[in-house]
Image 1 (spheres, helix red, strand yellow):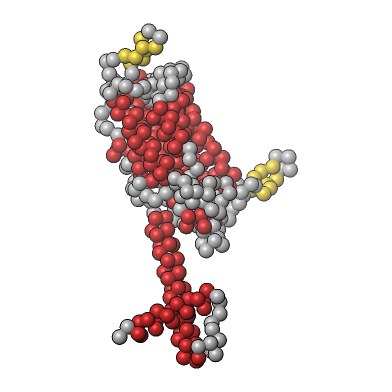
Image 2 (cartoon, rainbow, N blue to C red):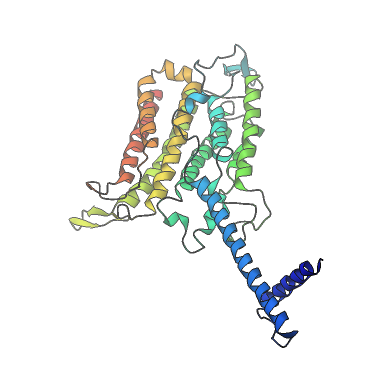
Length: 395
């Protein structure tokens, strides 16, 4: 009764062996009937294996496309989900440094830290961290990098831009904002969180094809970033209980804005270089080839820089609104509301740019505009506002 089943299993086994050895048995080995069954089984095994590989390949790429084609929760109204309507309440308690009274210290949660928590959760928990996905790093069949395509690298660049802003803020929290006058010891939670965010964004569990990164097994970048969330929550809980420091002085606000201005200034420089297809040479008194190009829709690397800058501005759209709450006393006492509103406006306008196809054309182009220059212009306006704020605070 079970003989046909056993015969089929034997035939499949012989087919596997034959396929493994890359040959079929000769007809005289076991007779024509055995040869026919083995050949049939070999074909079935080969086709079945090929079909399984195709299905796995499709699933592999389908999950990649599902995660990479849009960013979940990237609405520009997100700061209002984080910020409270009321300004921070200052505690009547005061800190002492070397026995002398210092500035009133905050016994309330830092809005900047809460914004860090929200953005980290958005990027690594509510979304897949694309820069470290093996599908992203392998590219299309290992032949074409996704960074050389007009669409499938946009989310990775956007997330990298957000990470740049989070890293800058993490450094300022440790070095300046989380210390009393910048001289006390660094907060352990803030320092550990900063170290987590410095993890290479492309590290996955295994990295066999990149000698610059550990082979593995190692924790992927998304796990390190996710682990920073409870550290920030711990700091904010202690801050609310008057057991941690947040030094919301005017000079610290100046330094924070200076560092942010340098950060976004670097992005403007990259955008400008890429968008400069021709430039004027004063010595030759003529226009010459620039560092960039004017290929318009056909510059498939321009979208990388555009989306990275977009991610930065998306993050600073929330972080600088949070800074306004944390430094509410300084903003109010120095009458910074007007210039701060303009800064927030320009940041939001930069973050809101979402062209269907990112074009790196001429600045006076009609069919193919220069989206990189448009992004640069909005960022520079925000940077100018930061300089205005600094000037007012230094008076």
